[in-house]
Image (cartoon, rainbow, N blue to C red; front, side, top):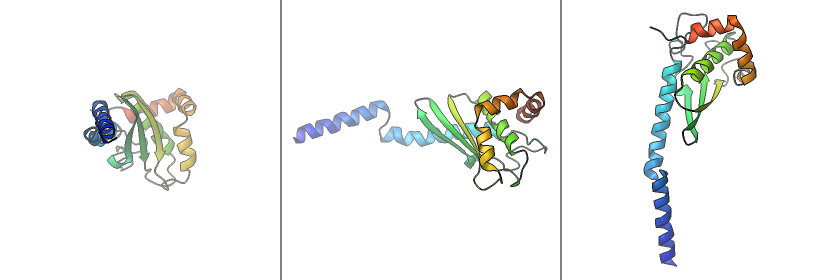
Length: 160
């Protein structure tokens, strides 16, 4: 019985090691997610505020800690952004969320699912805005509006 148990233990550890899910592989996982989160942050930090000459990073609307990346499947990731509008009644919060979505959909070099939220308790209508910026049909409809599309383009354009 002890031999069978030992053999099973050895076989399991070998399978885990080969699949990359051993302790060494598990230790590597958080580092990879951190690197992906930094990659996402580097893309969104330069987005311009729709009404101010500053970037979202300069206004602290986005920070490194507002980006979270989780692996869904192998090479498929869930990217979660929680941004903080400058004021609780910010009328452009939906537009900022749209800019975040457009920039990441265009620029992220890895397969991903994207969820964008207003940080809890930082906006008076956060629930409604969260629904809007995570609804594919509403996002597509918004981007069909030429005036709105032009504003988004100006916000997401890369600085020289």
